[in-house]
Image 1 (cartoon, rainbow, N blue to C red):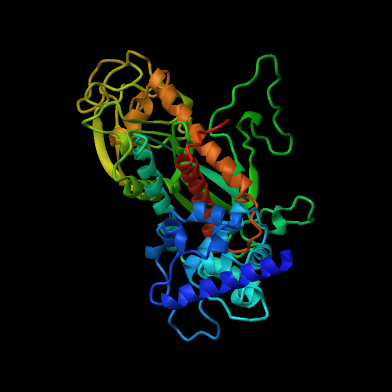
Image 2 (cartoon, rainbow, N blue to C red):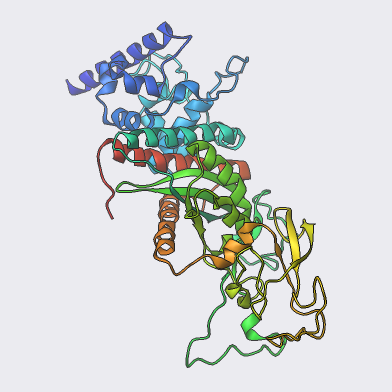
Length: 496
């Protein structure tokens, strides 16, 4: 009796779904419409827990305006829409499925999701649901190809929509976000033997020999200290090597891998968690600061304004980062970035006159001798100036240097630095203030997002293509935002 009842429900479910699609072929209902109007679903399907769970997760997204490809071409098989594929990939990530084969098997076993996600069904009276689940789905190979060939801009549309939905939901709780943002990068290891420490290779980290397993990955350094290490008390200094006579304190160490990097802009949602505002995937050889301008552009477009505060690690201590957040009308706005000791530790204490001129060792304002456009020492072409000794320029004086500078017998002390206000802010930022410490604490938001992304498999994807990895990363961040949206809508505060 029970088996006949289940068979009857599946047959009713299949016929009702097909009748619904036939009656609306010009505008087939999508996940958002089913979420808004669950009464349009077949009753047997609407009561299934898997349908409720997937609709609650993916239904709020605006699938109607999803940028779709041309589905009217004469394909050998019915064309699979990008929207259906994106929905299936989000199901794969949310359900913890490891491979495309697992995803396909899951959809076959939960065949109610096939028409719900928008896959064109193949009718068959031999199946309880009145359609053939296996024949209605693309092959595992085709799903893998779609992940590789799908434009990332389509998925960026969904990520942008999650930001919109979260902000609208938070406004109902009288919460506004975006005053403070944080940016960080996450390493992604390519699926190649060069990253396997157990594989015997003569040249593991030779950037002139591209790994055969992934034609797009690049060699980069995962961990290298950008701060000067202090020698612990009571500990002998690092000895100088006998074969390569370089001082031990100057040797740099790092962890090198072939792979990619994912940059993400995050903001804290008080009481609920963290959300992703923008993300970008690049090869591992790109510097952290190369993520800054592309991500800031997208972030500002999605928020509609420029945040007052931001926090980064010391790798982003650059003049243009500080200049980006400087405001003439709001002197309290700034970027909380630890001082990077590049260019010499002594530069950390550099002081400036009220009109912006650097002070020499004798605390005299150094006049600007000339300016030029620098296109080599920075990612951004910028105006750079040479500031010289005030006792030697613009007029030579007979007065000796009050600080007895070591270069006094030559040209006196000189300084080469950008003329932008960001260069001055980098040195004069009060990193001991309570406001700086409070803003810098917000950087944990990126660490928590990276932790969630790692749990979803971002660090070691079993994919051998750069475009596919970029699409997978975007899908992971979409799912993280959707889970946050669920918690807000269900009034479930953040729990540690």
